[in-house]
Image (cartoon, rainbow, N blue to C red; front, side, top):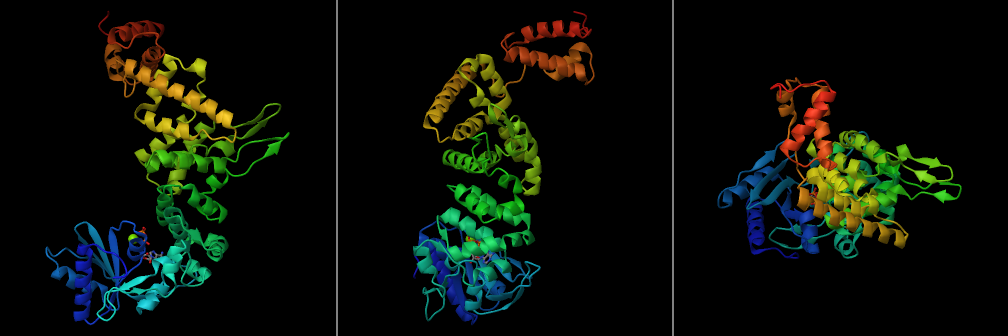
Length: 474
Ligand code: ATP
Ligand code: MG
């Protein structure tokens, strides 16, 4: 074998080869599996291409395996798949594809292994390993994929304009591989992406976002985000992010380039957390800045309220990008809304009540918020960074103390809205809200202690102001 496989994998591939031989067809390991084996990356699936009926081959192989794994297949695509001890094996007949200009759907006809390799996206993804008798285990690499792999370069088997216009998703895939694998995109290939960027419009948003999320999940997402920006792909599906870019100067005063600042914050966050949604919060944290940007004479640039605008933009952006419309979206919106809170507290502001408020407002998200906030401290001015970091550490320390003392995280006031309604014989109304808020605020501000009796006494006073009497007549 020209690639190093586990004994289990070798046994499976020998069986596939022997089964294909008996059926009088040729078959090959191909694509990501071959690439990742040569790179020494972990693999969890393998693609098999055969010259003939891939579905029939999958059934025959599965039938010869202990436990006879169940085969799933799609007749229209000629693909079949089964799982073996968590390992995914996919089969397809070798094909030749031709595309028309207005659709991603190619005309597919049976082809040779060379035809099949030619229709793949990048040379490093177009290498095959023969599983056939005469040359079993040999690498078939018509486009110099192995050299490109060694040089860490992404090139296309065909002219890049053809490859990308046939399937524009490949432009996203190229940038994703560059980010994930740390490869360089060949200059001609990059030029072709920049030339064909508008073609991405014919690809479904779900598939674009799949690639975007793989970029966001990489160790250094900024690599891909910057490539998306510079190649002009980003503006096609996420223009709000592009709006962040650039610097304006008035009266000799400039603001920072919020796009590159954002990329730095995403990378900083990625270095501290694997959480995809926390990384999204980093990507969106300043998204409200362009809409709130103002130059105040004698003072400079301001972005007042950008966190509120950003919070409101989040659901729209999630919808546009076909990201989940669920609690993940709410989580991101919440972090965007709160991202300034911890760092905006100056030494004098770090009071117990400010800490309680922050803990109450952030709830479960307090640790993630602190990661985002720390990641947001970027500046060319080292003294400034140092000052902010010191302040940040102070807030972190004080948060810990107040949390240990007051247990505000996931805290609920000692009297609920339901109880208030029963106490004063109210139906759901504005008054219930007023009373509930009064109790909560008084406790967070440290005006009354966090217990039922104190809350009840406060309620009585507040209720009197509203001309309400407790039902029991107390
Ligand atoms: P990963 O599994 O990490 O996403 P991969 O390269 O294995 O990367 P898959 O989507 O699993 O990607 O596809 C397997 C193989 O199929 C690729 O290596 C490539 O040869 C081919 N391929 C996938 N998508 C395309 C495409 N849009 N255009 C051309 N070839 C593709
Ligand atoms: Mg794969």
